[in-house]
Image (cartoon, rainbow, N blue to C red; front, side):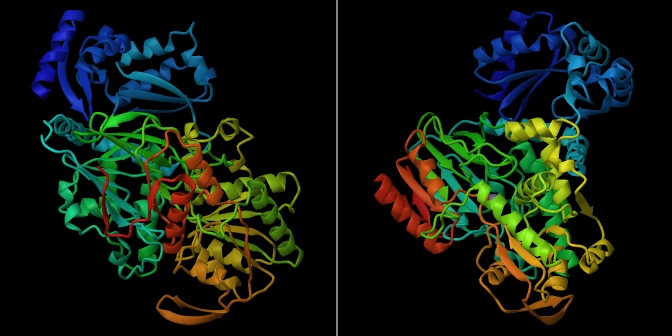
Length: 639
Ligand SMILES: [Zn+2]
C-alpha cells in the first residue's frame, strides 16, 4: 500500500471508530505508522484503539499527542516536580524525543504507579506528555546522557529520516526471480573486521562493520573490511546496516559509511548504540594521543547515532522491502545479539550468531538458540579449534585468586589487560566477591580507560542483565560495581603514582589485546620486574602484542612517542582461562545440537583460518549438513 493509501485508510478507520478524533498528522516512523492527535482522551485510550486499528491495517500504529498541545519541556518539568510526592524520591526528569514520553527517575517509582494514586493521570492531563516512572539507575553514565541529548537535538531531522525510511519500506517490490547471496567482506577465516553483506533482488543489508585488532593507526584503512567491492558500492545503495554488538572488531569502521555517503538506518539494541559510540570515541582519542590517525571523526559517530533504529530482543521489524529482522540475546556482552533475517514472505531465513556465549555468565543469560525458522546459520568459531577446551566460570575465578595471592605474597602487583566492555565487568565481579569473602587480601582495584563508564552503561540497562545481577544492581548497598574497592583512574599523574607505589594492587586497564591504551603505561613500568604479574583474561588475536607476549616473547621493541625502545620481559605472564565471552568448541556444538529448528547449511566465520576450516569439517561430519568457511571476498548463493 502506498503512503497516501495508508494515510487515507487509517484516517477512515479512525473516523469510523472514533469520529471526534482531532487527528492532525499521520506519518511513518520506520515501519510503524504514527498518528498525532489533539484529542487528549484519544491519546489516553490509545493502546486499545491502536491495537484494533493495527489489526485492520496490518501495520503497527502508535498514537501520540500533537506536539502543539504538549507543554514545553521546562514547564512540564516544573509541573511534574510539583506533582511527584517527596516519598517517591525524585532524581531526574527527562523527555524522550522519539516517543513523547516524560521519563521520571525516582527511588520508589511504584509510589507513582500505584493503582490508587492519580499522579500519572494528573501528569498526563496537565502536561500532555506521556509519563513513565522508572527506578533511577544507581550509577550515572555520561554516554547515556549524551545519546539522549543527540536524539533531542536532532528530533526534527530524525522525524523526517524515519518518515522517509517508512516510504522506502513501503515502496513496491521488484518483481521477478528471487535470489539471495551472502558476501564475506571481513572476519571470515580471521578474527577482526567483521562484515557480511546479504543481498537479494530487493535489498542489500550489511551486518557489522568492524576493524582488525591489529590495525596500524598510521594506516587505519588496512584494518577495514573489503568495503570497496562493487557489491557494497556506493554506500548510498545499501538499504540497511545491522550491528550485532559494540566491540570494535564489529563496529569500529561503521562511522566511515557515513563519511562516504551512507544515509540509511543502523539497527541495533540501545546498549549496543551507547557502547559502540563510547568505544569508537575512545578509539579516536587513543589514536590521536599516540600520534596516529583515525579514519573518521566524532561527527561521523554522531551521524550513526542520529540514524540509529533501536530494537529490543525478540522484537521483529521490517528493515527492507523484503526482509524482517529480529535480535535475540547472544550472551556475549551487554546488548549483544544474534541476527535473524526473514526474507520474502516465508521464502528464506538466515541466522548470524554474532559473538555468542552459550552459558549463563556472571552478567548475562545464555545465548538464545530457538528461532521461528532457519535455513542458513552462520556461526563464530573463535574458540572452536582442536585444542580449545572448556574452562568453567569457577576455574576462571579460582585461577585469578591463585594468581593474585601468589603475586601479593612476593610483594608485586597484578596488571590485567581487558576490553572495556564485557571482560572488565566479569573480572570486577570476581574480584569484588574474592575480597568480600576474604579469599584475597583487601586491596585497591584500579580501573583505567573507559571501564567505569562502560560499567555505568550496564547499570542503565538492567533489563539486559541476568536476573540475579539485575536484582543486586538495583538495590543500594548490594551493587557490586559500586563497591569501594574500585577506584577510577582519571589522569596520567594518578597512573604514575600507581606504577611507582610499593603497595600491592590490581589494575584493570584497556586495551584488551595491548594494542595501545593506558595498559601500556603500566606494562612499560612493570615489564622488567618479575614480582609483578600480567594476567590475560580474554582472547589475544594473531598479530597483537598481547599474543606475542602470551606466546613467550623474551624481549619487546615498543615505540614511546616516536622513540623505539627495547624491553626485556621479566614480569610473570599468566592466563586465567574461563573468562571468555565466547563459547568454546563444546558449547558451540551444544548450541547447534540443541538449536531449533536445525539449519540446512552452516557457514563458519570469526575464527583464525585453520580453526574455521577445521570446525566446518567437524560440523559436516557431526551433523551431516553442508558446512563451509568462506574466505573474505567470496560470495555464496543461498537461494
Ligand atoms: Zn565481541
